[in-house]
Length: 226
Image (cartoon, rainbow, N blue to C red; front, side, top):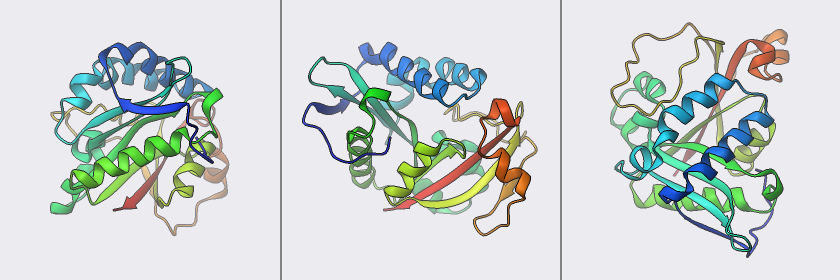
């Protein structure tokens, strides 16, 4: 997703129902490349990505965009936004005060392998940031896994501030199902590494591995003040 310039052959538009198969395939491709768990991918496809129109475009202050190649009308990238209470309900429950209702989450950002480093991710992110400003958000929140090097580099390059890291054993990882009624009381056992914490050598080693290899999920939080 690291980008240099925006090609003239790419346009960004809102999601349309006919885009669903291509968006799901793009999501699967991206996570397969990082060796992420099948259960995580299947959960996303069965929940929020089963009906993108309902779970994103029909949500107040939510949206989903696709990047389309004007050469062949192929979807080569996607990005979505939701209020944090839906995009990351567990983290939302851990925050207090009115400010949390002015934070949005980036979700499902991905670019096809053949379109990476061509400005697609940058254009998608710019579109989302403009939408966030227009809808009164004051901060953008996003998470990625620590071993997803391209994603981490992308967010840091575009001004996101590195936050804490959640460590959770596989099998106990909270999924972002985007369900307003989802209970957040049954929280899995996890460790939190704050920004300035000294991370043990073994955890530093495991953070570089996929969850299927390390048997843990290391989730890196990022924030972008608006």
